[in-house]
Length: 447
Ligand SMILES: [Zn+2]
Image (cartoon, rainbow, N blue to C red; front, side):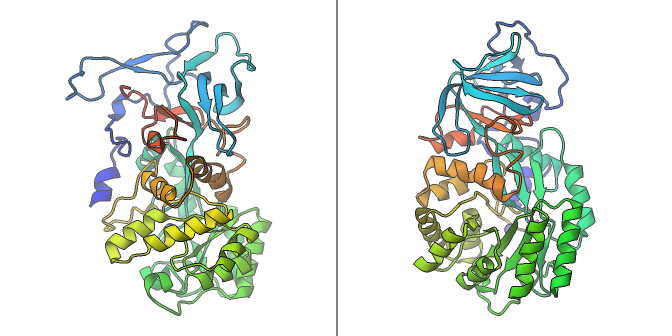
């Protein structure tokens, strides 16, 4: 199966088009001191083995310019901070113990004597990307591969299978470690008996049947550490079916109220116009897919006015069209174009799904196909970056932790050569990626 071949247990960065042996990547847990502690040093080069033994330049050493200590300054940087603000050239980002402590112009920031300085030569620093809709990522190697590709946070919106929520949230803690992407989790779908995804996949869901059961279940999820609540308003249209059960209005409103009382956003699987109306009526914070039928101008306006964020999952529709012979991609691209033009909040998410037997490979790490499809729907590079960083952080309830290059945020950073605002392709090949200030990988590559 293509997916298993791409990421099952491998430690190679598979998304950047370049295979980087893990052995050449400085471990995030390295306790080695900086190789050069001279105060005047611009960088701390690390010489490693050649990346590609078949290369004609195999004898050339590789110079890595990535941080090697807990406190360092990225200098000569171009910063795109993820808020949508104009880039900052000739900038400095200071990191202390995994947290961004200063961001500003080189002329304005006074660096401590002796601080490790990483000269970026004008390379671009962005927030670590966030994939706000994934599944089946409870795997340390897989989370590491996401991080190495520049995605430092992923949000799992349902773990399928006959597994209890206590076990799910225990596993979420266990699989995270140095160099992995941060894993935010909803646990499982909260919906009614026989509702989607049970209706289609026969998969276990967290069943509610009245307001009291809704309130109890949301409380349990919050106590276990859910980052958000996932629900479903799917009457069946996406799957060419009708009449699948969904929560009534009273339960749906109670779900949103109970979640908000615990400071948890609610994201709903929605793919049809009528179900979208119902989700907006209930007050959900966002929807986990794009509507796969033509949207009226009134419905587009309702999404914008209600502030409901939209995670288009265009890659899912692309793959579903290939597998099922559907032709939804032109519709979802047009709906994204309409929503974006009207000012809706767009969040990047792909519906990455590693379910065995699903013989297509979602992008692992940087979601290059999703980014390309968003671009085709009329989103500018800056708008796509915002969708994948600050907007996604809010959607995933981690906006106080990550998603922007700002003081106080975790040093989850992607450094790319060139300018992603003129060439989104630069995002596919990071120079290095930091999670909480530690190098996750992709360093060690011959530039
Ligand atoms: Zn999904």
